[in-house]
Image (tube, rainbow, N blue to C red):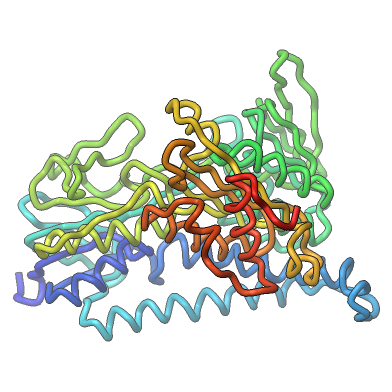
Length: 468
């Protein structure tokens, strides 16, 4: 083995968790390599997840606005037409720019990017097999950041054409006349929104009794009401038992809670029931690394696996499968390795559904607070009472703040409305600092702005909202 194959740290996976961990490690003086099995860096998020989906969400939102909303602003656009190919090319350009940017960041930081599939060999070594052959890397520490892949249902095997995962749903060559979305989580709602805006009749099937499972139930219903007005149809407490190809598409058999069944015709079925940890080909058994019954890698408070010198972060360990969660874990892990005080505040990790309106959440839901026996006070502020939202024509939704009834400390904030993904940052910072609803209520917010709805909700916690 050459000297160039010896590192302080080898990171397996160049998604948000992996490449950010590698960058932070380089800042801390660790000689670092970052291994990626795909030809481009950035992982699922940049290549086939967060970024391309948001590009299509942005483009499809503009298309929908041009067709429905521009007239109210006195803007005439003539006959509206869709160039799906151009929309897809724009999405691809955004992805290419960002993945190249990651490559540039790693190079600038002195991190060696190694293309190929990594397999642990034990004793601080891993074998990387790529287009240029095989190479053995040796390191004091190996950090697994291999991410996740879509879950495939036995009753709905992916064929990439009629039954697709989220990756294939980003590459459809035409707008399906009828789209069946299986799963009402963030991915299903976002991709369903994209294709509904572009003209598809979208039906969302969900096994539970509500959408956006795990987020605040009251606010999830607010979002569902808005999406229904946009044309999305929801079949809750329903499962897809089977799907048979036809000459024109797919015939799906749906099972209801009461035991009855019905058939539904679709051109494309998008299966979006979640993701699973990707650790299949990492050779974990070779190194003695344990996995749990869900295929995830158990770690301790310092992100170390049961094997000394082998660590793991991101989607491959327990917790929400979010890019920003993986990033924070990557930074914290390498800081701890360098003897610093790395830390992740799991209580203040925001989650966002990028529909229209957006749904953003941080902290406890009403259901979680009740389950923990915490008495709460709640403040609610509708965007219909916000001046800036009025000027934007974006008055659907509200801000909900949950505070501890005895201490007034903010326990959770849930926002359905315009720019909720940005507004939630104020709530996350407030909670990170241990703020009370009174602290938010007393903070001066510029007028007219959307964040005033956050202030108004904080005032409402104490029953003293001014604009409702």
